[in-house]
Length: 523
Image (cartoon, rainbow, N blue to C red; front, side, top):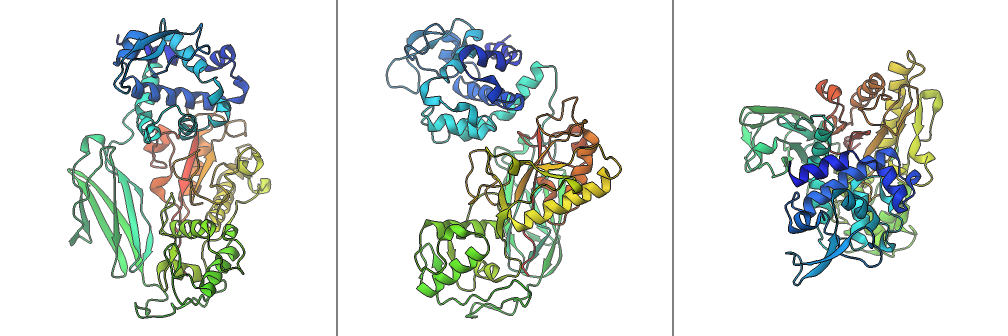
């Protein structure tokens, strides 16, 4: 048995609650689910730091985490060992542990030191935990978090195998993750998917309507692939994505927008006649690198403020600052259907951002719906005063309410003891980067608690005996019925429900459902 096997088997059988009690971490502050998250992410750390148990530190000192000697904190848990490692120019004192048991306890003891005070508040996701450690100086590598996260599937598989559970490859064939169902003529959109890791490096065959190829789209080393496209003509369009003998068919409806008669010479884009539409006359661009005429700045700020992006500041002031720039970027990311912030922060005259700001259904930024127990809906995030991922687009809020009502009508009315549809994280008050997630930046995605057999929800894995698979199946069906939901981006790891094509497997989704929406057509 290899050193890595010894580490994995030992760690699998460890009770982190007992370790936390022994070293001074309050175990009640870290839930059972979060302990499992910590076990997986720390093993991924050790895979990286120890080169899968083959580094000199691992072999000679049972130190799989690159822990440097700290006196007096590590006395009684380890001994100092001066050793030359590739990352240091000279010999450095590291911790030497007598065995793997001592290392596991010593690792967590190391994290009770003053720089890591408050760790318990950052245990809910791998990204949050790793980001906290990095911010406190655990690693100087700017890509440290992503490197460890990339090893999470391997760590999860090793721990599962140690417990006698076999985890199949998460992707066994070409798979679509994100694509719009409807787009406008001339609207840029993105298609995303994932392939088998064995297909990485291969070039996809992509055909539009069996006539027009999209060249040079390769599968990345992590199996992911994506491409951007623009349709020039309306109609029911068909994309075929293939590699070897695997094929995906994607249907997209392309429609002519109401302002299709406008062109590059149109000074003022046509506004919708529907209620809620707004005419915004601009004499120049507004935002980062814009002309920023006073009246134009006020007009854009007023519209964004009206739509709920109130951090733009006083709408009667022509002052421009980061609040305005961030709001424009968020707005741009929303209308593009992105999960992360990605915009240039500028409203160009007649451009798509300008047109969406005028639209009757321009995305409003708002607090997510309150719980409605009569309709079987609970907003657990709003009720959690320690967290503030409570905000998102009104598009998502509307979808959430419809899902809850459909689940109530289609399942809970005949199963009154079933758990409600209970949601968790959406986005932060101003959107943008969150340490708890990769994504969740644009108010277009939502996490859902797992239902329990006793009518409660949350705090369990899909493998738990308390888990209510029938209620989950009904929830997934209600989610997938919604027109705006990206059916490939309904993430959950219940193997049976994956086989039923109700959800897509994704790292970190053993204890909750995640779904995303597309923007609607502009009106």
